[in-house]
Image (cartoon, rainbow, N blue to C red):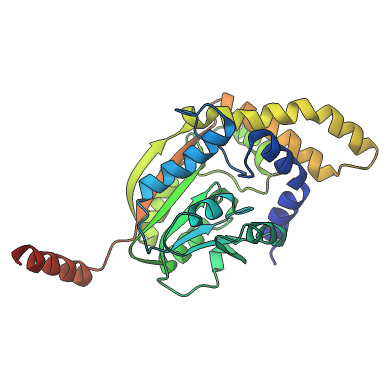
Length: 293
């Protein structure tokens, strides 16, 4: 296992207590941001982002959805509870896969999403909700996603992206104070990810800036960490909190600080794997025959 994969595992193991407390406060074990445009509670905001992504990707009965980087499985299990089709979650953290399986709706694998133990062309939708940010080699990941998707399949991404490509060295340093403890490489811009996805064989279908709607959730994490950090430092002095746990909490504060400074944005991106010309011709011909009948 690579050093980066070990760092991702360590981050989620060490911060599990914080996400569990947040889950109790927010009324959901989802580990991602929510959308507050029409929500009145954290639980509703977290449900709203799942519903927004589902509506955007247009998941149909019988289609297979892969939640790549599923965390503790909140979104995958919520989708699987009502979807008439297969839902699979992949996480590199064994403890998360174990927790996710307890709900009993979706299937979960403990594996690297950039080398998924799944056959080619098995998925209609690849769902990446705040997980592509952990990928150290995004071109390789996108190549793997193209392999997994059927022709006409969709990739949906909701995540944090650098606000612009020409950040100053000082601004990059500010971002790294948040990214490094969270086991995240430097952020790409949304434009840069689009270029990489198109090179891999995907086509951009939709792009939405959700920063304003997701802002309350994104800032809540920083405010929570700032309030609880003094108590955590006391526990750290008593050797009841690790160095990594304290660094992760300080990184939560840095996430809010860099967001307020306008260094990054939160985007939804929808891509499609185009069908080969021969297959599209067959589909068009079939539609023409049906119309004549």
